[in-house]
Image (cartoon, rainbow, N blue to C red; front, side, top):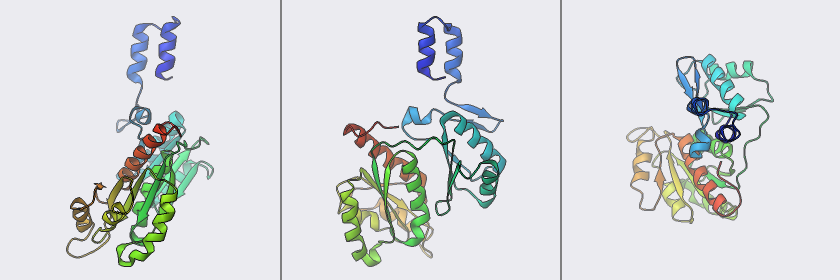
Amino acid sequence: MDLTNVLQDIKNGKLSLEDAEEQIRSMGFVSYSNIAKIDTHRKSRTGIMEAVLAEGKEAADVVEIAKIQVADTGRVLITRVSEKHLEALQAAFSPSELEWNARARSAVVHDGTPAPRTGGVVGIISAGTADVPVAEEARVVASEMGCETVAIYDVGVAGIHRLIPELQKLKEKKPGAVVVAAGREGTLPTVVSGLIDVPVIGLPVSTGYGAGGKGEAALLSMLQSCSIISVVNIDAGFVAGAFAARIANLIAAAAGAGKPK
């Protein structure tokens, strides 16, 4: 039952104020065992979906949390999925209920409910092929939040000529925001921001080695960018994808193409 139904029942005299208060207090999350409170209303409250971070959780707990979320909302995104988590998910859900993205290490479980379509468009760019897994995590998140995604991979500054024609194709799609994933020295988000007129989210990736390795040089480079970009933490594909999708969905809603979900 959602808040509208509760208010309607109060209006029609079917529900007392005391019972209504109890129902409203129980809305918004579902407790699982003594370890999780699943935020089933996060999307309607903030515009950003609830997702399950599998990392650090027992496989059986991930499965049960996924079942609760699907029962309430129809779909759930699970990120940072290990082989053990994947085996448990494949045993618990049929192939028609489970969508697996090996590069992103992300799974979507659903009851047949399709992902919403908002009219938002998000561009996803990676500097190198090694940056694709984190970029793919961002792309899956943006797609689950209702956006069309346009991916351009392996166009880093070491061969900048690869970027220009691909960027032109991206511009034709009129993205509301663009995520740029880059490791090593992390230059690409600054370059992209200087060539397009939409918000750019820099996504530093833990590729690279030696001094400044593991994404640290990329993060500092993006934070020191002479162009205007937003920057998320190292390997934070979920955050980058969600932030970009939120921007794109608000733009689409303002343009009348859809309503932010």
